[in-house]
Length: 290
Length: 345
Image (cartoon, rainbow over all chains, first blue to last red; front, side, top):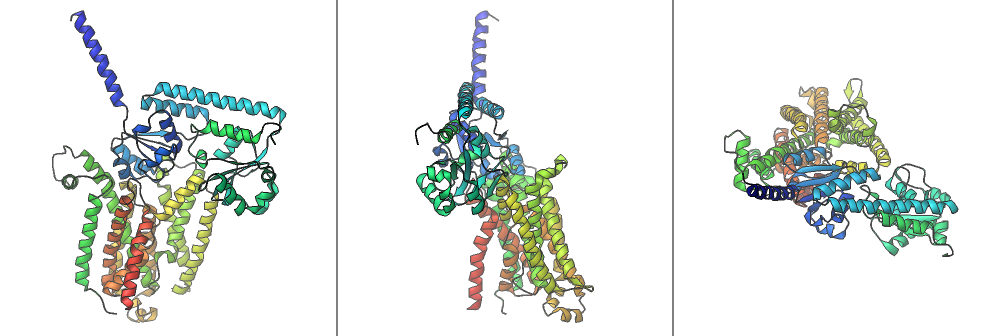
């Protein structure tokens, strides 16, 4: 074989293999996990999504995509009708027989862990980056994310050397009525801790509270996550439905904060650092500001 | 009571409706397959040697998704309706439903234990995990029914009225236990529990199907043999006894068949309300109270109703899916009301 031909063939070979690699990447994506969908979108893969589950609400353009229902009660045929190459979701995705049926139809089913810690997140985002052919973007995003969280940690540690962590309660409610209080072992508790707050609730999970125990806790800062209302309307509803809160230190000092409830499900999402920053701002207001 | 249709007409009609429902259930779904492909894939599934080219997808969807789902719908619908007839016959009250002997609430309790407490059963073998929910629901239904039956017995006799009250009490008790588990559940398990309580034929697989198919075929073959005895029971317990019916044995059989059938159906598909109560009622409005007609006709009607409801459940919001319990009540209740008002006029 002459050298020239060899070079030409090598070039052709490289070109082909490169094209093959690009074509091997899944093109039609279905995502069954809120945080995962957000990461796909952050990695520039939103145009590849052809369907999402009901927990994928951010960014708002997701809501225009076909809904495959709730991540735990997916339908095999429904997903297959979207002709996906890949289905991504957390270990909460199911039911298992449906996943088996989807797999049998030669759809790549990729499971990601929803554990809220950085090593898991790193693995997840790197893997998503590979699947999307966006390794560099993934590395970059992760780096920024880690820097932001580190800066957050440093900031909290610093401010706590001079100031006491405020007593906080986090209420999850629906239009203000019968809020559930976030206790230990919840994403909400983790969030409060990262933001430098001290969660007054000592139970585990999300539990409804009696008016009396609410009154006795008397938080310095109230954080509420409302599933139905946002902004001033949610705040008004909360205090109208639970007048006892009016007598808390938080209400008197006007230290009532809002949190997007979608941040509390499905593991660490790209919007987390910003949310933490806002919470810390509220927990440790600039001196002389009040 | 005058009947609207004669038994023969009813059977022909119901068989046709049922066949149509089966065909629709196999032919329609969120994935639209060409009719010709569906036909060829169906033929291949029953063993006709056709060339498999281009049929892979149709065969997969038909064989692995729609066929098990259709069979599940047939079995669940049939056995729920049949148990409804058995209970209405036993209590001699058209308002009775299989839930009265505690089988539904017992199954719900079993399911709640499995869903919420699943993580506490740490030492279970790997292969058993996916079946834990079904097994717990089945055993829960059977257990509570056995207890209700036991409470209704005194001096070798089963008192139907005592059994009814015991059923109500145990249902309340089981519901409060389910409530406790609901309180203990976290967000994710809570939603699983809620969805389970609305029932679904989604995710039917052959491994879960076989036990139900065997039980429901057994029940569907056994109960119609007792049609004469059930007819006699309509006259009253002592009257039936004078007619030579072993009433105690009949009651035992009815309760046992119901517990077994409904327990298996609920274990496979979750709670599906309305079918057991209204299908027998519907058939009775159409064809009169003779159990020789009522029992087999209810099987056909129940199976057809559930298949059609499932069709709505999987198509209405495609690619997402509605829980079937919502649909059965939504279709059935207005139709039932219509028949009721028409019957009165």
